[in-house]
Image 1 (cartoon, rainbow, N blue to C red):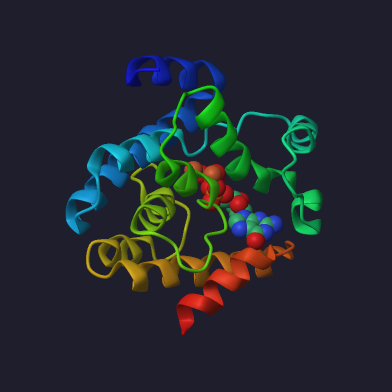
Image 2 (cartoon, helix red, strand yellow):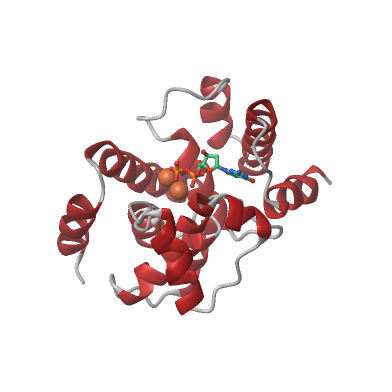
Length: 186
Ligand code: DGI
Ligand code: FE
Ligand code: FE
């Protein structure tokens, strides 16, 4: 599928604000790739497709995971929204024809992160948080500056902020989110 067809499909699947966010992550990923010497085209595509499964209703997410033999953790069972990342990688491959494992990995891990992320994984994770349409998160100015100064420090700021936010909401924390934070703290 070429990029124009991908955008058409995303625009019809996603609600308008989610589509705008997707374009924001696309070009922010490309900018970070330029800054850190990552493949710009891969970053652009990973950013564009990272939320391609976001529109699936929770029941469909769970059903699709079972069909695709994707393991569902207790945190994911209780918060099926988390699964849009893993299912995003499935749709990117099967619907959008992405074969590149680095792009698929960046999509798969964009919500929780994971220990030992690749440069592309980190770029998409960070772009998702800082893209220009985001305006709610605290310390966004500092985090945005840090994204272009020190990628790992920025990653840590985002993970810390996310954990604080989840704790304040009383939301269940996915073990992978915590593991990622602890890994990058060291
Ligand atoms: O899909 P986006 O909204 O663009 O961003 P995302 O894929 O990072 O998902 C963000 C949502 O995921 C946000 O509402 C917080 C939630 N989230 C991230 N880590 C965890 C989590 N939710 C739970 N319950 N547990 C987590 O560890
Ligand atoms: Fe997402
Ligand atoms: Fe996103």
